[in-house]
Image 1 (cartoon, helix red, strand yellow):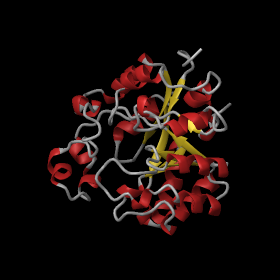
Image 2 (cartoon, rainbow, N blue to C red):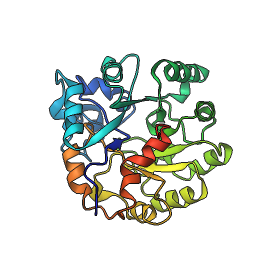
Image 3 (tube, helix red, strand yellow):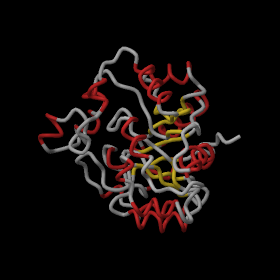
Length: 292
């Protein structure tokens, strides 16, 4: 059978073209020290993603329409987006198309209890279904197992929503130490009811990521920021054996990858027939609390 064409895909990382990419990524570039990152790159991981759709679409007058057209073209029923009270496009999207967009919120653990209050307020006001964190991108950096993260994890458990967290070597030229995969083990030990979904690959520690997913029921992996031809073999093999319920599809449009490229390459990924529906849809709906 291979990859199903009409399943109603759920993409757990999608966004809209932005009007000012330099401003969007300034929180990352201000922390870098190399000249390319600070002066030349529009996108902080530009050296890895040579054909970023965002650069071509920058300033598009209809960013929501652009993303919806791509979703419709490639069979994506729902997409999880990051929202913020300061980003009107995201709020407009969930207001106008609540059946298409799932709200998530990126958090900054450096803000302490103000951050927890922020989580609760947006959860109640906008129906947020997930929170996210980029440990290497926080300023100052906050490791996955740093105790500054513990109020965030506790609140996620209390609200019954997952945390999506970058793990592995980051694309931007920032220190990787906060995202070492072994740090997840302590978090899952201390929060056994937490649903924790890794983002951005876990490389070069994918074998360890698989071991930890076998160990901890709440630990999952999403494929964000990876073209399908580069999906780690460890992850594909795990999905085809004991991990069919643990691997979630996530794209990277428009940041670094076009949906056309993702879906064109996706058909060659060696998932078993029974894995595809879980990977493309069912696991995301369950993790996000949207399964009927």
